[in-house]
Figure 1: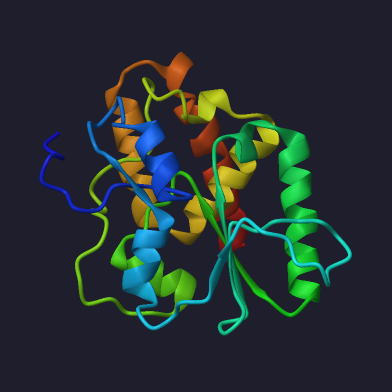
Figure 2 (figure 1 turned 90 degrees about the vertical axis):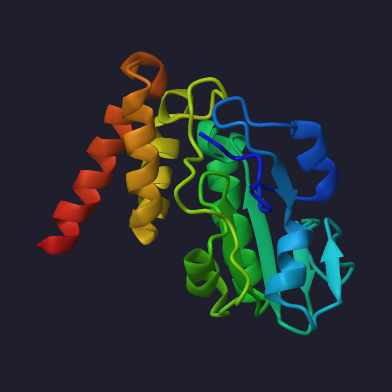
Length: 203
């Protein structure tokens, strides 16, 4: 897989964490901080508040990105948000709290990349520049971020997110199957949960 000439890399919450994560072991692709994506998605917005609580809020929560002009909160949900049930529950409560305060909340899972289609789906913004290459898979065995590394609720949560972006589901499932290591990939767990959603949706 030739990823050396790709401008946009796997999403991380900021530039520092992207540099720290380094090159992806499964694909050889670099990482890109969310602030770089936001400069292209919202070129005229400069009031982003990063990882800070608001003194007027009752709860001392710190969203990854907050814009008062857009009334928007963006959270990047890494692996721990899918393998730790306490994190999953906490995310649900935080989202409810932010929405109660009047914010639109966009949560971006680590396995959903900011392609042009995803950006339009999540933010309602059409970007002319070609963003993340949607043919590159996000899940892999070497990176230890596959469904096999998640808790049961995390796999269900992953399936729900992939149901919103089926094109990325297809790319990732195909890549995991190519690894020919079902024990480490856990691809069957994901397929089972995804198929349940699709069947129930069609009923």
